[in-house]
Image 1 (cartoon, helix red, strand yellow):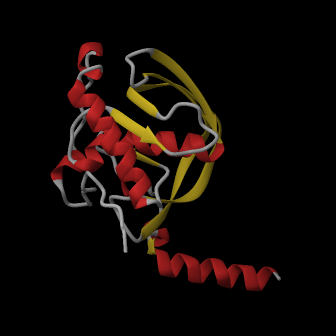
Image 2 (cartoon, rainbow, N blue to C red; image 1 turned 135 degrees about the horizontal axis):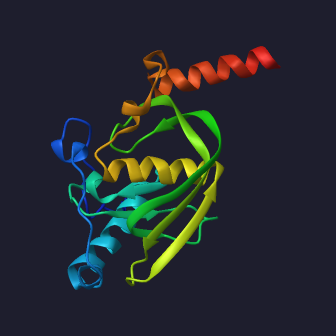
Amino acid sequence: MNEKKSPLKIITLGNPTLRQKASELSVSKMKSPEVQKFIQDMAVTLKVVGNGAALAANQVDKLWQIIVIELENMSAKVLINPKIEKLAGKELLAFEGCLSVPGYWGQVWRKERIVVEAFNQHGEKIRVKASGFNARVLQHEIDHLHGIVFIDRMEDMSTFMTTEELERQFEKGRKKDA
């Protein structure tokens, strides 16, 4: 079997790096071979892991403000030093999971739309608008860069559950609705 190995290790809840604020990068640092290689390694890691929408640098034990995104309908794939410019729309409650909290899910309120200012991997300023699931992903990943994990945003800890339990409850709900 030719299984691809992830170049970076995703750290999990309990590792202190997840709770620390990541540092901004200068434009010259963004363009450095070290950061460019790291961004490539993050992208490969996200693809190899295969069940995540995005990855923040501190999830791979590096305190840099970098997010790599793997969403087909989002043009920006790398955000460096992202800043939330605007949150809008309704607050929506939905289940979130996290590569750093593997096998667990919980309900989190997030705004339905977001506008983010950041730099791309070439050090160019960009502005990203997102709504729905993509807005949720951006809010979740920007939280990581500030040392916040989705469980910190949960208001009702009774919704914190394993993947198996979530699937079981979802299936039960589908049968009830049928």
